[in-house]
Image (cartoon, rainbow, N blue to C red; front, side, top):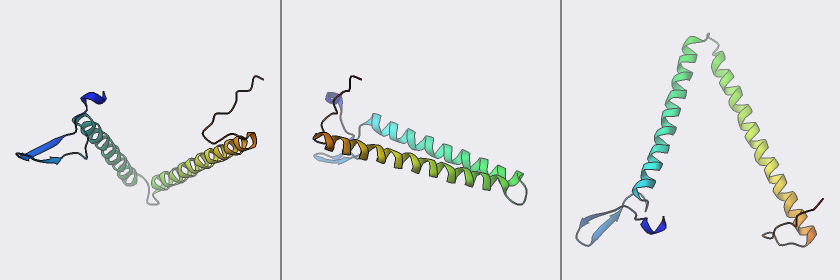
Length: 112
């Protein structure tokens, strides 16, 4: 609720205040801190898994190369998804231009 939103402010002397948490309230500060905690916990667990894998695999580091290849494939798939999304936006923009609509107007619904 916007009416109950109160950013965290520290009053260090009468009439002098300092904003804490970049203007966020306690709930936002807790959520942001929790997200960072989850992210760093995941990274620590993942790096521990990689370290265990390198210690248990052979001298050629097969497991690390496998993770590297999967990472490259993942980056390529994300790049492909972004590129196709841009193509769809461009096609929609051209279709609106052909119909004489502004970019913020909706396309008419086809009944067919």
